[in-house]
Amino acid sequence: MNFKYWFILSEELYQNNTATIFHRTSSFERVQGMMNGGFTAGGGAFHGPGLYTTYTLEGTTNLGYGPYVIKLKVKNLKSYFVFEPDVAKQIHGNNWKLKDQARILELTLKLTDEQWQKYQKISESGKFGSAAASKALIEDGHFLWENGCKGIVYNGSNDGKCICVYAPYEGLQFLAYANAPTPTTVDFIEKNWVKSSKDASIRSISDLKFPKDTGIGSTSVKKQYQLSDPNRIIPSQILDDVRKSEYVKLKFYMRKNKLTGKNVFDLFDVASDKEKIAEILGADNINKLSSYNVSDLLRNASDKEKIARILGPDNINKLTGENVQILLRDAPDKDEMINFIIKYKTELSNDDVYSFLNRANDKVQMARILGQENIDKLHGHNVYYLLKDAFDKEKIARILGQDNIDKLDDLLIYNLLFYASDKDEMARILRQENINKLDGSYVYNLLNTASDKEKMAEILRQNNIDKLDDKHVYRLLFRASDKEEMVRILRQENINKLNSDDIYNLLKRADDKEKMIKILGPSNINKLPKNAIRNLHDQSLLGKT
Image (cartoon, rainbow, N blue to C red; front, side, top):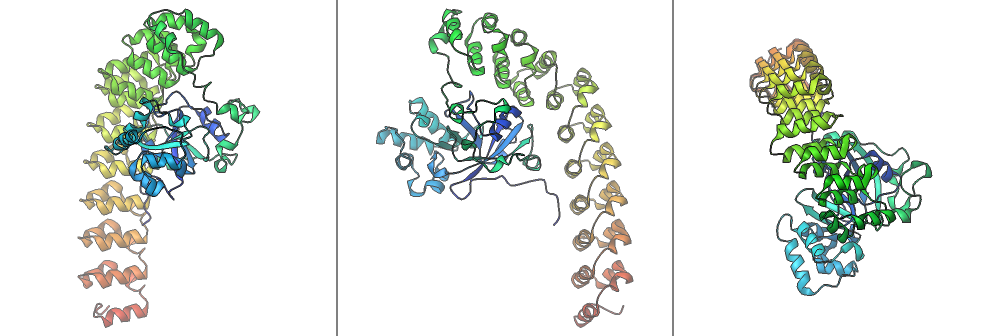
C-alpha cells in the first residue's frame, strides 16, 4: 500500500558492536561544535562526565534537554561496560557478567568477588537495575571513567535506553541533526534530519580539530578533551562557607579561577543570601547559567519573584519550551506559574504558548492574556495537539482562529479526522479548504475505516474522492459489505479507473456476478481481454454479456 503512515520504528543496537545513538542539546552552537569534531561534557554527570545518548530515537521525543537532536554512530561497543543484562549478553556473549566484562576490558578496578556479586545483583534487580548498579559503583567510590572504561550502556528511569560515552569519545561519527522541540514524534524527527555540509557525517569526531574561525573551543583536540578544567568543581569548604554567608574564600578563589555555569549554579543553589551571592558573582558570571540552571533555580526557589529579579530578563528568556513544561509540570498552582513566567519571560516561543494554553484551567482567559500575536506563534503540531486533546474543540478552534488552523498539514488533518469521535464537528472546524489538502492515500484510509461511509463521503466531498487511484477504487469495491453504497460514493468516473486485472478479480470473487456486472458497466467489461472472458465463461462465472 502507498499509505503515508505516521510511524517509524526506532533505531536500536545492531550488529552487536555498533549503534546509532541520539543526543539532545539546548544550543545550535553545540551542534556546530560536534559537527566540527569537539565535545566537552557538561554539568550533568549522574553516571560520570560524558556524552549522554539514547539508542532508540523514540526515547528522544519527550526528553527535556533542548530542541536539537543529534544523530551519531558509536563503534566498538565490545569495549563498553554494559550494565543491562540482555544487552550485555548480545555484546559480550559468555562474558556478559560485570566481573567478566571488567576482566576482558582490562579495567583497573580493584573489587572483591563479594563486591562484584553485589553490583551484579543490583543490575539484575528490575527494569532500571542497570542504572542503579552504575550509581552504586559511583557512590562506593569506583569511577569507571578513571579506570579505562570507554563508556557504559544502561536503562534509566528518566531517559530510557542509554549509552554514556566517556572522554576521549573515540569511535564516534556525526551523522545528522534535527531541530525538533518536544513534544515531538519519531516521524517528525526523521523527516527533519540535516546532514553536515562539510561531510562531517562520515568522519570521526575524535580525529578532528576546530577550525580557527569557528570561535568554538580550542584548535587543540587534546585540550578539548581535558575534563579537569571545564568540569572543575567548587571546593566543598567554599560551598560550606557560602551556606553560612561567608565569602572570603570564594572571592580569593574567583581571583585565580574562571567560573563555569555549573559553578555559578552550585553557588546559587547553596547560598542562603541569594542577593549577596549575585552581587559577588556579577552579571557576567550569572549570565553563564544554562537554561536548565535557570529552570532549576526557579523551580526550587521559595521566593520565585526574588530569584527572577536577581537573574534578570536575559536569563529568564533562556528558558526553552522544555524548561517551561517542567516548571508547569511541577508547579502546585499551574495558573500561578503561567502568570509568573509571562510576567518575566518577555520572549515567548511557540512551545511556551502551547504549554500555557494546554495547561491553563481557563483557556479563554489565558488567550486574552497571551494576545493574538503570541497565539499566532503556534506551529502546526501545537495546533494539532490543542485540537486533538481539547474537551471542547469548538472553543479551542475559536481561540486559535482560522489562520492557525490553516497551518495544519495533510498528515495532521488526516489524524484529526481519523481520531475524532464527532467527525462532523471536526470537519466544520477544519473547513473544506484544509480537508482538500488530503491526498488519495488518506482519502482511501478514511473511507475504508469509516463505520458510516456515506457520512465520511459527505465530509470529504467528490473532489477528494476523485483523488483515488485505481488500486484504491478496487480495494474499496472489493472490501465493501454494501457494494451499491460504495458505487454511489465513488461514482462511475472513479469506477472507470479500474484496469482489466482489477475487473477480472472483482468478477471472479463476487458473490453476485450479475450485480457486479451492472456495477462495473459495459465500458469496464469491454476492457477484459478475450482470454479473460473465455476463462470466466469456462468457470461458469460470466453469463451472457
